[in-house]
Image (cartoon, one colour):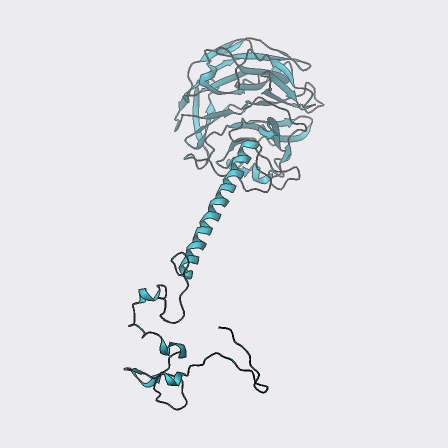
Amino acid sequence: MASVEHTHGHEPYSTLEVRSVEASAPQDHESSNKEVVPHPENQYPQPVEPHSAWDAPKPAESSDADKEAAAVPGQDNGPTKRQICGLSPRIFYLILVGIILIILGAIAGGVAGGLTSKKSESSPAPASDTTPAPAPDTTRNVNILDTSKLAASNWTDLQGFTRRSVFFQDPYNAIIARQWESQNKTWTTRNVSQLMQSSTSGPIHPIPGTSLASASSDSKAGPMYEVRLCFSEFTGNNQTISWVSSINPIINPDFWVYDAHDPGIPTWNGTQFAVAWQRCPADNCAGFWTLVFQGQEGYIRVSNSSNWTNNTRPVVRTNVVSAGASLALVPTLNGAYVDGMILATQRRPGSIGQSTFVGDWNWKEDDGTILDNVDPTLTRQFAVTAMDNWNEALFVALSTNGSIRGARGNGTAYNAIPEINLAQGQSTNFSAIAMTMDAMFYGISDDQIWEYSVDISDPSTFTLVGKVYP
């Protein structure tokens, strides 16, 4: 109802009627507009809001559940409790926060999974230098990567002490060296990957299960000793050749250098390697490192340290050898100097073929057969050692069932050894093998590395020496 102002002197006047509270209820206290409500538990009067004095009587006290219900129209139960979607605000917001957290978690998981998948599919290149070491393989192996290959080499110092190195990969893909010297007759473990972490040339990233090949040098031209290991890494999408070298193995055996070749030499994916130190055919030079591998087009190629990238000459044709062909390389006596070499390659349909170095970086590709009936689909790898003061060599082949065959010869004729007898062998189901040039044999079996010596008088027998690792 609108109010109309009338002039009564200078005072405004309203037509609204004012109802006196005192007229609607008896009063027990002077000058009070409060209604006195009897309360059985309190002797003092209880005040009631003025506007409720003429409302309907207040109903009996309800249960706690009823207090959460919406207020009944025309009834005053105190401040009306607000609800959202039939729930109290507190419960509603707790549920809402929970739903939001679940959604955010799902989004974060999806993004992380997508990035991981994209990274794994975009490039096979290894992780950045700042990332932690890769997780161990998921097999039962705890000491050695289940797909690890094996490499070994030896050299003799000026005091006549023999030194040997055995290389493999641990479950984290790191390259591990076990090194032995005859003076103290002890094995020492060196994590080459870890030692290379601080190198200015950068840490190494060997491909898991990469082929490994090692050679060591000593020289008449001076006190030069060096231990080299060849392995595969990724350069972009290509598998390429890399080296690590211990260039002062007596004074500073923990100092290693890294050579990845720039540009990298591309190889057949999963190529095997063979490497040797080729002595110089004179007394005034140190010699050369010679590496054999399978190139991208399938040829078996030879590379020489005098100029790695320009001396990758094809030695064996691609249609003759198998894919991922097994290889072995051994120096041989050539007149007065040990500058000759014999190369063994896996030939199709099933044999070990011989190629011979004839000088001036030239090779005779097909120079006879070392061993027949060697099926490439049933063969893991080859290994070789020198015998009879570099006049002869013993080649062995590891089959996929763990058995070993061999052949001994002088480059002209070979005597086959149908089966190698592992005397006192503790575990002979080998997954990888290697040999040094001083007639020592190594094999990985059941997450361990074992050492055997070759009986020179009867090379069909290998005698157990002991466990190399762990």
